[in-house]
Length: 282
Length: 202
Image 1: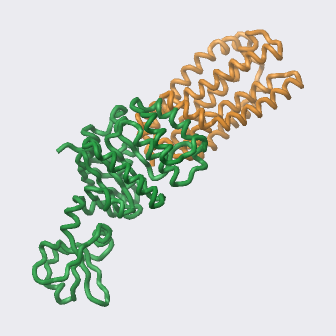
Image 2: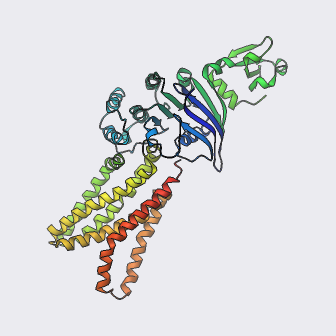
Image 3: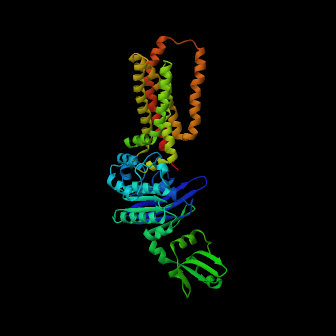
C-alpha cells in the first residue's frame, strides 16, 4: 500500500515538552483525523512534517519522498491550512491570486476564483478586515487551488459556523474522490471526523495513544457498565479507562474480549478519546 | 521569487504611500530652502527601513511558516528581502539623481556622487541589520537598530577632531565604495541565509 504520509519514530524534545517516538501511516486515498488536547503535540507534529522545525530523530516521508532538502517540486502537491490565516493583513484576495500564481506552477486561477465566489468573499476587502471564518475559507481555497494531492489541515474547521463547516467538509469529501488524494487533519471537532475520516490518531502529552481505522475503533471498543464486584472479574488488559460514580463503574473495554453477560454500550469517538486520555487506568 | 516580492509590494503599498507623502513634504521644504541634500538624506533613511518593515509585517501575519509550505525555499525567503532593499535603493537613487539635476542644477557626476553616498550608507545599514533581524526577529532587532544608528553619530563627533583626510584618500574611498558595498551585501545575504536555514519556525 502506498503512503501519502509516513512518520517513523519521530521525536522532538523541547525544554518543557517532548514529542516522543511518533509513528503514523496515512494510506493514499484516505482521511486521517488527528485528535488530542491543546498542547498535546498536534501542531508540533504538523510543523515537523512540513520541516518548519527540525526533528531530533526519525523519518518523515510525504508522498513517498523524504521531507528534507529541496522539496519545492513536492510542495506543489501539498496544500496546508494552518490554525490561523497567515496571509499578510493588507492584501485582498485579488492580490493573493496574483502572488500565488507566481509561487505555484500548478496554480488554478479559475478554481480559486470560483471558490472565492462560492464563499462570498469580497474581492477588495483586505485580510485584516476578515472574520475568522472568512480567513479560514481563504486559506482552504488557496490549499485547494493548486495540484494538491495531500491536504494537511491544522484546526482548519474551528471557528466556523455549522453551515460553513458542512460546506467545507463537502469540499474535502469531493477532494478525496480522487484515490490519489489524501487528507491529514488535526481538529477538536470530533463530529467532523465521525463524518469524514477513515483513520483516527490520538495524541496525548506528546505520545500517540492510538492510530486506528475509525470503523474498527467503533466496533472494537464499548462502554461496560457494572458494579465493583463484576468489574473485579474482568481481565484488566482489555480495559482502557475507568470512570467511577455513585451508580457503579463505567469502563472503556475491548468489547469482543469481554466474557459473560454484561451491559456494553456503543462508544463514540469522543468517548473513546476521553477514556484513553482522561479517565484513570483501572 | 517574483511572487514573494510582489507580496511585499502589495502588502506595503499603504506604508509606501505614507512614505511618499512624507517625502513630498520634505521635497517641498528642501526646495524652499534651496538645498536638496536634506531631502536626499531623508529618502534613504526611510528607504533603508522598508525591508525591516516588510519582515515586521510578515512576522505579525506568521507568513514565513505558511510560505515555507509552498514551493518556496528558505534561501528564496531571505534573498527576496535583499532584492527588495536593492530594488527600492535603486529606484531612490534614480529619482534622487533626477531631482538633484532638475532642482539643484547639479551636474550628473555630482548628483550620482551625492545619491551614491546615501545609497551606500542605507545599504550598509541593511547589510548589518538584516542578519540580526533574521536571527532575533524585528522586535529585538530594533534595539540593535538604535545601536547601529548611534555608532555613526558618535563616530562623527570623533571624526571632527581628526585632521581632514587627504583629497586622494577621499577619491580612493569613493572609487572603492561600490565594490565594498557589493561584497558586504553578498556576505550579509550569505550570513542571513545561513541563519534562516537553521531557524525553527514555531
